[in-house]
Amino acid sequence: MKPRAPLQDLLRCRRCGKNIADRRYPLLIDATNPRCPKCIFKSLASRHLRKSGSWTALRDLFVRQGFRCAYSGCHLVLGGNATIDHRIPKSKGGKCTIDNLQWVTGEINDLKGCTNHDDFLRLCKAVSSCSAVQ
Image (tube, rainbow, N blue to C red; front, side, top):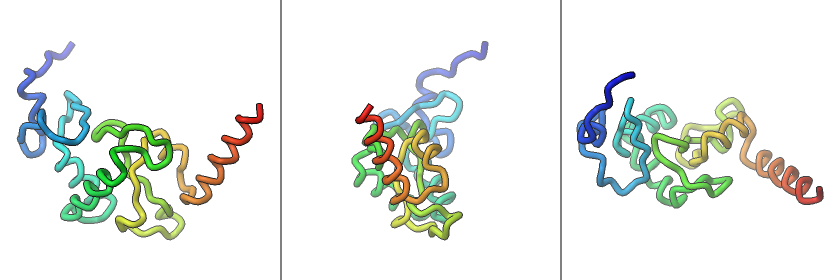
């Protein structure tokens, strides 16, 4: 069994070294890779928006969504269940712009796959109405 890191080390971002214990965004402090919200947003911005300088746009979107999944309303945790979804998938011509992104849970992102936003909502409504009948 690996020895655990001291608590004060767990409360520091592995990337920038800042204390992450008192941040205002929900966190999952992963002992193997603790990161502060800013570093998480920068990492996701460089992957999904192709530039880390746009991290504030992802942060603002996260706040506008109220830290909740766009589909289920479940509470999102940075570094945990929070993932970025393309409303129109890149495989179907969707752009890497903030207008085409939304925060969802990883589970829902896996279920949605390469389905676009409107088709996924129709599918969810169809499943919901079928299960309500039974």
